[in-house]
Image (cartoon, rainbow, N blue to C red; front, side, top):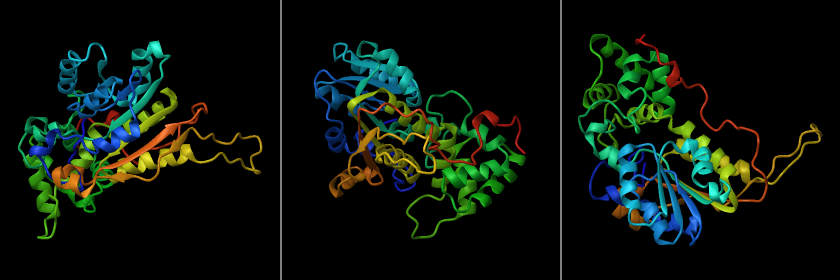
Length: 348
């Protein structure tokens, strides 16, 4: 995970922008790292944010579920005299990681930045199986562990596959796509990205005015499902509330509407003034645990021109108040979706 993503609103894959961190100046302004502080970069990727935070004088706990990214972080750490702590893991486990790695600070940190979604490097490497423009194994796993996209495509019930592609991919023709996948996999299972993209392309079609590949939305849905991205984001937001110090800054950069909706809902809920109810006098009003920072910030025209992957980026931020973390676990994800744990042994 790193700055610079390919998504529904941004079909560009590959090219010179792959290592350019998106909204870097805006992230640093909102995160405001200072010497002596501890900042969590929950999505290290290529390390663009981490380098800038270290250069500002703060220490960094860098998390990534991709072993290749963690190897990069470990190499980078050698030049920062113990100020960079790489951790291989999911940012949904942020609370446990921070409590373990920031034990000297009481398990609390001064800032957290999350750059949500698939990384530029993962998109660019055909063997990772994320791209519908390059042939590779149908994988899509950020960590390399658990069921792959091929497992999902070949084994998920057609109704569940429809929901994955329709809800997570926001594909209007999800029903037709799911049925086409079901019909083809009965003859031969899917193993390659371009094979799947070809079947989807025949179903969805492409008008001359279309800016994105017809497989874009379906691949997005599969990738999000395989990596449980929205659930990870929801868990990370709740964890951030628990580990940020009062005055700590939370900064999230998202790249499509599903991610942004979760972040917006969380910050709106957590920054709303307390309000009780005369109908439920024994229920304590929800506390205001964050102060939201203005509206979402997007890339400037200049940055979008320089780095096309920044076009769909949105930055939202909040500042932790002194109120204790909420004990309620709000449902921040999307209902009606299947679970990887329920993946059947064979397709139906």
